[in-house]
Image (cartoon, rainbow, N blue to C red):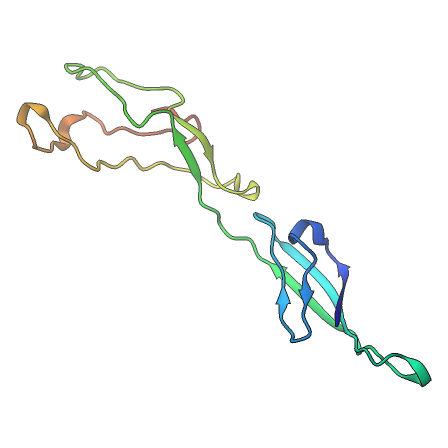
Length: 152
């Protein structure tokens, strides 16, 4: 059997369970979500032959380093509602909804300093005065979302 002994790092932070090495040499471990860092281990192989009459049942130690690198996690948000209704004939009157985007996050806890920006793109539109026509000039200025406040 193999024995892994932690030399430096913390198992409880990087990994769900202590990494293991099977007799066929398969290394098994599961990283914790949004955690990164380094853990160093000493690995020793034991046999069942015992130590009687000067026998040795363990190999020389080998060093193992498990390096878990960070990745850029996707930002996330939610909309207060998927539908915004505005009355016709409000041309020139700015419309806005405070806090329309909710739970705005740059990603994992180490990504809070990243710059966020929303892209509000027209996916489809129907102008009912001319049914089935799309009209990019329906708005005097396109809708936008403020990533700091979530205001529409």
